[in-house]
Image (cartoon, rainbow, N blue to C red):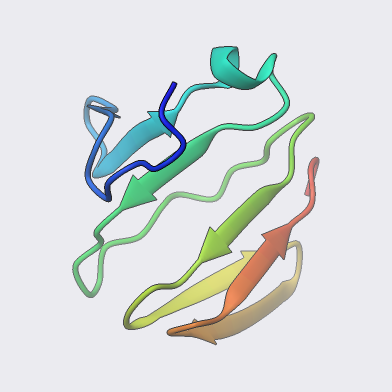
Amino acid sequence: MSIAIAWGAGHAIEGTPFRVVVPGASTSGAAVVLTVDMPPGLHVDPHTHGTEAQINVVVAGRVRVRVGDEETVVDAGGIALLPPGI
């Protein structure tokens, strides 16, 4: 596996704008890395991850993030940590 991975590399997840650049199998299930370019107004339906945390890194623009009942906006350069099970 390469140490440096280009944005937009990996394989598309059908029916979504997401791409898998580091699959869980590459980390013994410890992490998965996805990239996404989301146009304004596009959203991801509410969901939880049972065993892994989700870390969102906002490269450009801004993203509204909800964790449980708490909602915040993360601007470019910000990072949101979404714990498992919430």
